[in-house]
Structures are given as structure tokens and as C-alpha cells.
Length: 511
Image (tube, rainbow, N blue to C red; front, side, top):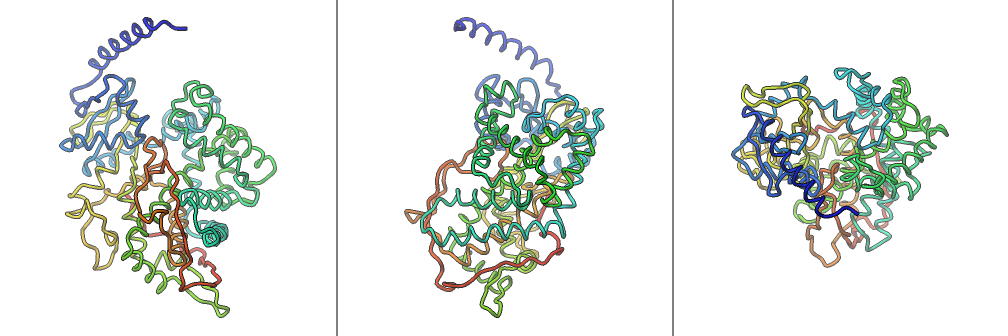
């Protein structure tokens, strides 16, 4: 056993070394240095406790500063909240880059340790073969247009039975229902009929991995420091490996096909590809689940708005066949339900806690004023930006369901770069249209068919898990039991869905 005296001595030496090192490495040309309430390790603890929200919390404490520096002991985060500086980041895309973070994800999230594989994935500017970026670029065309709609058809087919079950069980956990619906629809639409996530044990293992990422991402003896997440990741990787060995990818979506093809042609082993796929699901599930929950929460908590949206969907996206089947048309939701689409984006604006990130790969002077030193990280938290009057006008603090409408009802001009939920150009979430399809189609069907009330009768916000390292939409920490009853207007009606292939993507605002 280590003597407590030794710990105190080591701590004192670390503190002394830190202050000596820190004082010598902060250049006065860098953004203002901001300390934490806890000396030395305060910002590291803040990140562990509050996840990506820590950057926004620090920015809110210093509203007079458009950019601040947070010392993370061995690296720094430059936190930006100014629209002008965000545009300056966009102008310096070659030296403030997202690409190196792909390698970080492969190593620290997916657990790839093979040096050869990491070199294959590393960006070309850093001497690697650039496969990480090639995979991302290969994926993008499969998440728009006809390939997107083919995935949507599969997604719809899987969601429908879950919506039917909502009417069979009067009381259930709404958040857990959103998890089940998202996991079932997203994974089978992606991986096809041999989907490894059909197995509930694999689903549970993946959630162990996702919820434990805060400790796992440090990649320091993960089998000891983050054992549950580490074991969950390995179990899922083994299931994906079996899926690939049995040829499941040959029956999957075009998205799965291009990822597999690019990875194999780039020289990845099937074992390392299996590990990479574990992290892939984060993009389709980690934010879709809480976004779906908060959409239902915010709509049912606003009865007047809920009534307006029901009428809009009925008038523009509901059709009735000769046999009496009622169908929701996803294409019509995209193109003819502006209030629903605007409300969805306003929920994202007010609820999301995104923080687009770039790595400084070369010393850069931002806006001819602030020195950003190579090896450090730039973070642009959305929460301060979502409240800035110069971006959103006098109603920046209010919930305005018509804020994103393009008609004469639009109330305030919006400045470019102010909506960061999907990232900041040129690095925008490629799966945003698939996730939006999934959420809006489900929401449209649920609000038409059911009345939902929390057990107890009050829409009180549940506690959020603020420590998540990957979810920006506020996953909740507790159960949220609700009662659902079928609406009398549609009692006994048979329901269906419709998607017109190849009609394209949602007109979503991006930063």
C-alpha cells in the first residue's frame, strides 16, 4: 500500500512542475487565460463532470471575452463564442482542422492500437495514408438523395410496429421507448437483416460502452479504469466481426457497403474494421435518442403548439387510401410542413449543447489578433451562441417555434454560423438528414395518434446526464413514465407510411 505521505509529496511536485511549466508556456498573444475554482486539474475535472458542456459553462462566466484559453495541464482548449471568430476559424480550415480528430476517435473511442492501422487512418498532412477522411467522404453521398430514402423506407418499416405498441401499453418509460425505437430503426436500416444489434445483449453492451466513454476516452489502462465500457466495446466488436465474417454487410445499406469497401481497399484488417464500427453507431443513436425525447416533451408540454402541428400534418402530410388506410408522407413533411420543421430546429437550438472542435495543426493568428498554438484544440460551444442577441435578435432567450420559417412569419434575421447543432462548415454532420427523417416521421405519427401525459400529470423536466462526452442533446438520468391513450379521432384506423424515393434532404439550417 502506498503511504499517504508519498502521495502528498508526489502531488506537491506535480503542482510545482505544473506552475513552472504553465507560466513559461502561456504566450501573452494567446487568448486570455481562465483558471478554474479547483487549482491545477479543475478544467479536467470539469470536463469529466460536465462533458462538452464544460466549455460553454466557462464561456458563460466570461461573456465579455470572445475567446478564452483553458489549461488542461498538458494541452489547452481555446473556447470561442464570437460569430466573427467562428468565421475566422472557417477561413483557416487548413491549419484549424477536424481531420486529426478522426484518428483520436479511432484510437481512444474505438480502441484501435495497431500502429500500422493508425498510420493507415492518419491524415495525409501528418504523414499517414488518410483513410479516415476517405471513409468519411465515401459515406457522405449515401446519406442524401435516393440512398437516404432507401434507408428511410427500412427505418419506417421498423418504427411502425413500435408506434403500434405504444397504444397497447398505457404506461411506459418514454425515454426507454425512444432508445428502443432508435436502436431498432437505425441499426437494421444500416446493417440489414443480419443486424448484430437485434440481440438485446449486444444493445446493452453498446450502451455500457457509450455511457462509459468519459473514462474510456482517456485510454489509460481502460481494462482497469473503464472496465464496463471496455468490456462492452469488445463484446460489440466481436458481434460485428461475426456479422462481417458471415457476409451480413452484403445485405446492408449502401452506407454500410461503401464504408466496408473503402476500408478494405485502404488496407484495414477485418478485426480493426469491426472495432471502428462500434464507434460508428454514436452518430446514429447517441443524439437521436435524446432529441426524439425532447421533441415529444416540448410538443406535448405546449398544447396550443401541439394542436397547430397536428392540423398542419393532417392538412399536408396525411393521405387516406380507398381501403381506409391512413398514411404519413415523409416527403410532404420535408416540403409542406414548415411549422413542424421550424419547431424541430428551435428545439435543437434551445436544447443542444454541441461544441464543434478543431485541432490547431500549425501556429495560427486568428483575426490578426489571437495566437493559437499548434497542438492545442479549438472549441466553439453552442450554448452561448444560441443566446446571443446579435445572432438571434431580441427573442434570443425565448422559444420561438416560427424562428426558422422562410415565409413572412419569420420574425428575426439570423446571422450565418449561429446554429451549431450539426457542426460548423465545412465539417457538418453527414447523418443529419437520416436522423431528422427518423425523428420527424416518428413525432408526426405519435402526435396524430396519441395523447401522452406524464404519470403525475406534470411535464417536469427530468435530470440530465451532463457528463456525456458524445451526446449533445441532454440524455436523461432517470425514468420518465407516461400514460398514452389513442386519440378518439383515429380509433380503429389502419396506418401506413410513404416515402417518395430520391426527393432529397431536409432544408436544415447549418453553421
